[in-house]
Amino acid sequence: MSKLTPYQQFEQHIKNAKKILITAHRYPDIDAIGSCLALADAIKSDKTIKVWIPKNNTKDWDCFPKSDLVEKEFPSSFKFDTCIVCDCSNLERVENYEHIQNTTHDYTTINIDHHSDNNYFGDINIVETISSVGELLYHLFTKLKIPISSSMATCLYAAISFDTGRFAYSNVTEKTLETASKLVKIGANPYLITQAMEENKSEKDFQLIKIAIDNLIINKHASFAYTTIPKKSPKGSVKIIDLIRQLKDIDLLIVFQELQSKLVKVNLRSKSQVNVSKLAQQFGGGGHDRAAGILFNKDLETCQAELIQYIQSR
Image (cartoon, rainbow, N blue to C red):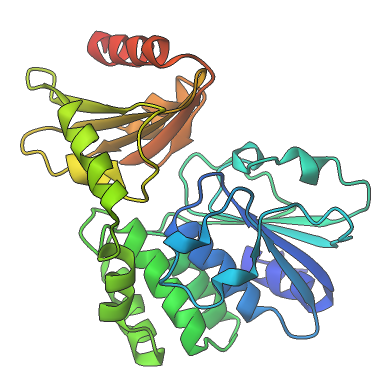
């Protein structure tokens, strides 16, 4: 008997699933949310679906239809038989993942991801080297002949557009562009999606940009630059890392964001030389070769000193 492919395993399991919990990584981006919403729409027939994203901020996701379906609180009374985790290299990247681990009833975990450092934590693992989970799901739905609605196409297009930097990053392939074209044919509107994603910046966003520019440190000799977002900064939705990566002749870009007195989120980007996934792994983080992150449980000055010292010693 031939072994089932991950797609076939997914298809076989979902047919019999009744109660499904869908979640993604902490500090979810547009690829994570768009993928969760598209997946929920794809498999909702005769099933109960809950999309759980702790500490979510749906006002930043105007590009998505049905974003109000996302729940902030863990549905503790929901006895799910299936947990689908999107865009996570390991379960620990899910905010409050202990709620899932501490569940006493039996369930199957499905891991859908595109990170190179994925540890295959699922009972079913759909992990591919591809631009985004949005693109992966398009291929999954197409292969399994799952109809893609206009709202699903919008979610998938937004997911792909976000994780490819509006189709500008090195993870874009011919298939990525073909997929985007097919999603537009189905009903995704690139102009409206990009407008919702990009042309929605608030006054606080521009205050945050000013802080990032004022705090920018550039090391031309070592070809890296970093900026700091202190805890007292305005709460904006703008991606500072996307702003500073526009620096010419700088390969490694870093944003240190102080969340609490001893909790710092670090975003890392590389244009060509540095494998930031491997860099992040040295400090308990992870991600892609060109985009990764770290969460430090230390004060801002300590984590900056440790990371910068490590970069300069390589």
